[in-house]
Length: 134
Image (cartoon, rainbow, N blue to C red; front, side, top):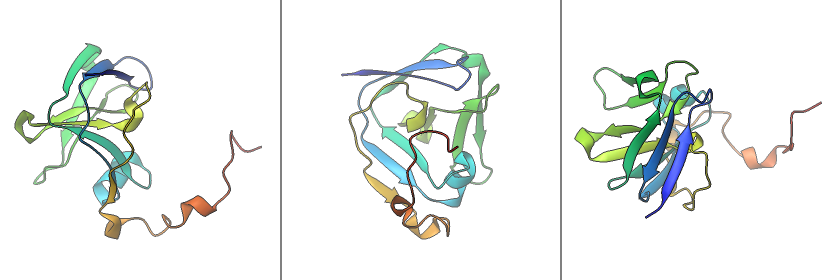
């Protein structure tokens, strides 16, 4: 079993995940796009891994969209997405970008592709620039 470390952008919240991920989904639903401000959410899922907060647990804010099962946890200082436990403790959801280490699972699938943004097509064909454009 491996241990993966993660944190928020400002560094106030740190955590470890012990265990392995079952799936890695890139979700294009409108809720995940709102959560991330991007083309999709990139979340890792595990029914067996354990979350351990190392620091800043008092800075973690949880939000559940009323009348849905859509849940988001984030740092109350910098707004970074953070792991959360869903389905009555049965499922750990970890935003892939919150990890500070490499992971060895590739995305399982794009999901809710019918909801993707109209500009989210053929993105692999646009120029790729290594750093901030000049």
